[in-house]
Image (cartoon, rainbow, N blue to C red):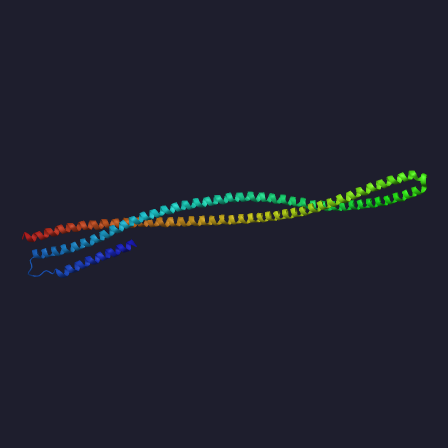
Length: 321
């Protein structure tokens, strides 16, 4: 781009020089009656005017080149600043990504520990659930035994009632026997006493079994509630384990995406750095070309000054005539 600008400027300068040359050819035809000193003087004056125009044009070109060189230098400084900011951004981003990866790694470790604890708790809950389940079976067995004992107690009560009835009959028969039945009457009384005691004991057993039945019903109810609570807790822990698995999968996906971003950013930054380096190299080359052109223009200006000095010497010849 800069080379095209320089070509345009040089083309413009060449056109200017051609115009000056053509004007000199058109305006400076030597009259026949003019002597060579006057003609040389006129040529020197026209040449001085044209050289001054050239110097003025070259001065503008030199100024433009210097302005362009200064702009290129400022651009180079800005590019270096951008390159520095990109480098700092890359380091900051890498630090942030490293911190995120570290946090994810720590989180995964904690989740693994929590999942292990939850699994252990779930296993323990399953064991407790089995204990409650077995306890319900035990209560059912106890209830069956209770029913059997209750049947035995009722049988004892029936036997006591029958024994009491037999004792009553024996007492009646002893009374009929008179003196000879006194001993039998005593035995009948003892049997009645034993029967009454047995009947009261059977009644106490039945009452205690009734209380025991209420206790067993209460224990069974609480056992079923405990079993349900343990089952719900086990289900919740299983859901928690599934949630931990989902979180772990999500973190793995995030980690994968971070790696993709990290790789993509690294490629982008490297590409930007390479492009900036190319721009800096090209800018440096263009700056060197500008400096060389400025040097050539300034050298040409010095040559023009020498020519002007010679022209002044030619003009002095007319004055010395």
